[in-house]
Image 1 (cartoon, rainbow over the protein chains, first blue to last red):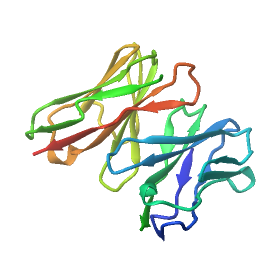
Image 2: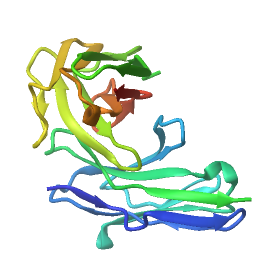
Image 3: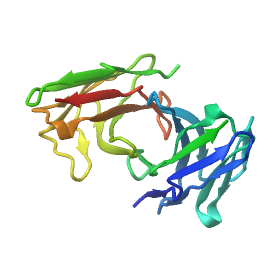
Length: 115
Length: 116
C-alpha cells in the first residue's frame, strides 16, 4: 500500500529565510511518480514538480529545489529566500502504476512566510 | 494545454437536495478521472476513480449510492451528491489523467459545496 508522510504540519519563517519541507513515502512498486503541489488560499492546486522513480537527480527551478533520495524514501522540497507569496499549503503526493495511477496525498504542510 | 474545468465553482444547497458537479477535460480526452474531497485544513482524500464507459471504483468508506459518478464521455465526468447533508459540505476536486496517459494528472479548480 502506498503512503505519504509529511510530518511538518505548519512551518513559520521570516521572509528571505530558507525552508525545507519534508516528505517520506512508502511504496512496494518499483515504478512510481512523486509530486509536489502548492495550494494557495484560493484552493486550486498548482503543480510544482513530477519525478519518476528512476530519476534521482535533484532539480532546481528558480528558488525551488527538490532532493529525491530513494535510499531514505524521501522527496524533500526547499524554498530558498522565501517570500510572502510562498505562503500556502504544500502537498507531496505519490502515484503508483499498480495502484491504477491514482494519486495519494500527504497531509500537507502549511507554510507561513512573514514579512 | 491539458486544462480541466469544474462547474460550478461554488454551490449552496438545502439539506436533502441533490447536487451535481461536472468535471471536464477541455483540450484532451481523459479515459480516467479521479474525484477527491478535501475538508477544511485537511488533505485531499481520493473518493473514486472514474473510467469512461464503466462503473466507477470507490475507495473504502465512500458510499457509492451517496456519491454517484458518471463518466459518459471522454471529456466529462459528473459527481452527484445525493440527499446532501451538512456533513457533505466540503471542497470537491477532480483530476484527469493526461493525454499521454501515464502518471500525470491535471486537476480542476475545485467546487466548494455548502449544505445548509
